[in-house]
Image (cartoon, rainbow, N blue to C red):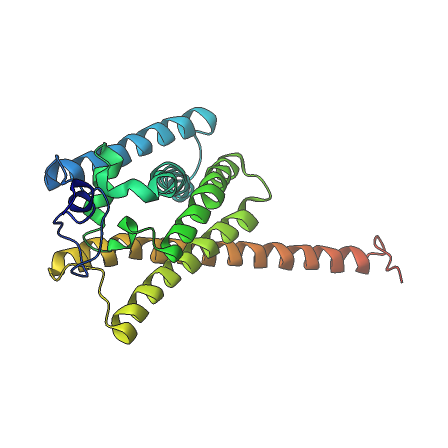
Length: 240
């Protein structure tokens, strides 16, 4: 067997057994180091975002601050972390930088990230380069009280929900219909990585979408009430 073939078919821990992970190199960092690095990065993002909010609008309500932190985190993860995958999907197996090793650790729960699987690639690319920048815009709109805040918040939340549901659905379809499993058999990888880390993007966008729908409904009710009041006072004339 040639060296090139050996490199392409190097022994790896990913499922299903026998998939080809081209150029695979084992991670150099331990799992605790990788998880601590990811957590520290999230904490740094929160700290910078919170500092920015305190400077621009210190009186912002706590719930609104939490929304800003969420969208700044989303924007950073979508644009930089998921964007990294999109730009490097053909060589993920051999990546040794921090982002590459984080992706290889996560891929123990979903090996599609190491094989340029079409759905995952297209979904992550759209998420990175559309919803990533839009998440930063929504965060800014929350801080400034922009009137487009809720329409864009609803749009981004729907996009996140739609992508996440399809992500679960395509994997489960392959598992139950085709008998193909992309996750290692250890429950830790399924429940902690695959389920929990993605379920966050089901729960929070659902809450934010609900809030935006309620805010929009209240705005239209207030507008309708004001219009009726002005019309009754003869201040507004209907035009045909």
